[in-house]
Amino acid sequence: MAQFNDVFSIEIRWIGDRIREDTLTFPNSLRPLAEHYTSNRLIFSAGKDGTIRLDPKLGLPTRNFIPDVVFWLADAFGLKERDVSKRLALGLVYSSLAFAVLDDAIDQETQSTSSNLALANMYLHRYLQSFDGLFEPDSKFWNYLACSLKEFTLLVCQDFTFKHESRDIATLDPLSEPFLLESCKSYSVLVMTSFAAVAYASHNETKIPLLTKFWYDYAMGHRIYDDLNDLHKDLGMNDYNNSSVLLYALQKSDNRSKLDEELVWSMLLDADFIKKIYDTMLGLFRRAGEDASAFNIPYLTTFMNDLISTHTQKRDGLLLIKSNFFKELDRILKKND
Image (cartoon, rainbow, N blue to C red):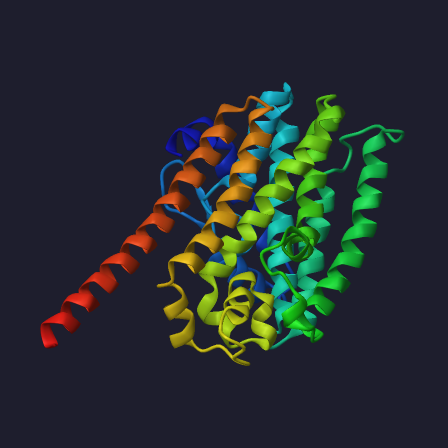
């Protein structure tokens, strides 16, 4: 992905500088928490290109996808005003931070929920500021934004319900599209509003439906990736934090009422379990790649191809470990006969 950093390194450095400077203006009561999130959840590398690396909790599996995708779209859609794309990319990073803070509050991972909510609102305010003055008062974008905000506020409430109200796990299909979509839709509304702003600013509104399909296919696949990363943490949370991977493991555990680490790791030695998890994720990423190909954006096409290749290798690596483990176990047992 280095070639992307070379193309947009100045813009990425600008985003990092703005966030650092903005954090210094926050109220004293919120600044330590803001510095926590920008230091631990939004990491600025020391590289000479000023690269930003974001962790998976901000909604992406590799560095730079969130800010860079705005530049990729702007470039492909013929948006010449670089200041506009920079503002929208910065706003998208702020939306990532806002959602990370809100998500932690919903997960009850923080001591002070009120501070989290105040900081999330600060970040959401910065996100909304990214649209200031970009469109005429009668632009259709403002209606799009109003509908998005109405949907987002409702979805955040539903996220709390989704994570804290008990449901009949036996009736769930944790790898189904409805389940995955329910768990990633609130943040996706913010992402799509920024993407739509690029489309409106470049007079490409007709491409918004396909952009939406691409993002949701990608986001559902990423939900599984994120759950794979958080297995240890989610094991200790109420209803396993509605982890798609852990709920699927529970359904495959012969009616056991509770999971433990030993059972989960044994599942990861089961070929059918590995294939189901990874093939569902890869299927969604491949579909997102097909969606993206319609835009003829070389950066995005390469990103999706790299993503699919990486997770294919991980799946094949796990299957090989499983095969070698049982071969070695069989050898040891035969030796002791």
